[in-house]
Image (cartoon, rainbow, N blue to C red; front, side, top):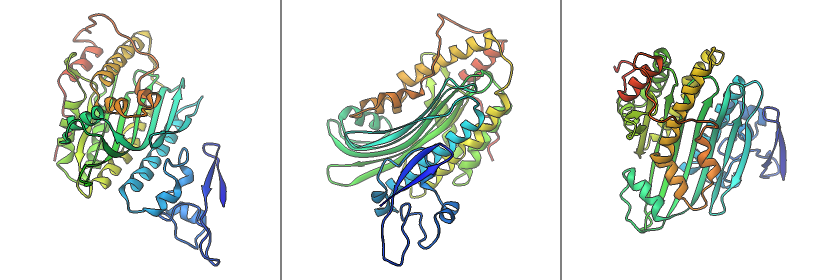
Length: 376
């Protein structure tokens, strides 16, 4: 039996499989992970994660998800689908002329994803929020990217893997609204002896075009609050890691004012930590959009924004290991991998802003990362 649920929020009809139990029991509308039988759907949805609120159907079929409620693969997929939906709808509330295009795709080699892209908006020139849940076999070149992350896999092997993650890059139209990037992911790799290695990685970072110290403090404070719920050593450690990772060596500068970044975390409590970080994205960023989206700017600010976007492109295409991993994975979906790139960017030969200008003050911070908040 299939029930159609119409979502008024995204004007989409979802097909949800129902499973018949005993004659005296009600049908389950979504996986048993979320269902207290005998309660109406509206009551359940109010108390737990409602699958029909996602931007699209889950990548993994509901019956499979129901069969493994405590499996980390299930928990991660449902969490990232929820984060995607909440963030997309928060962005749409700030936008006036367009909505997200939702593209659910299937990967022939195993798995698939949901890519949501908003383009040519009044507030957001381009916004991409992608979920991927993929599995199959990793070739040596993709494994090399994992080895760069600290995983000691033998070269030349082909290894079965599972990967699930949510990633987003938001390029605003107004130069006074910063760009944000976040990515939270989970990996499993099956070794030749049938043991499974698993770990989490991710982070959130901010790339302003004009330096506003209050914005940077607010952003970092939101991330620190999420980290401190789990371990007070996390924020300072992952803040430094972020400054080191989002570095453009040939420019001698960071991509932005940082945030947090981590990889290879494999403690039992890591999922809860990752969830807290992902949930901190909206309160860390949306207030900055609301604060600056109507600020006045001219051609000079626009040209500087395009130059800084050029730096963003350089990092993503030359240095970012996540981009390389995606491109080296069999069946790579290039449209989704490259959604982080802006619609417009610019490069000028030997451009160097005056050190006393607003542009120069931002450049100084990018060359010398700053501690934005006091560490307890």
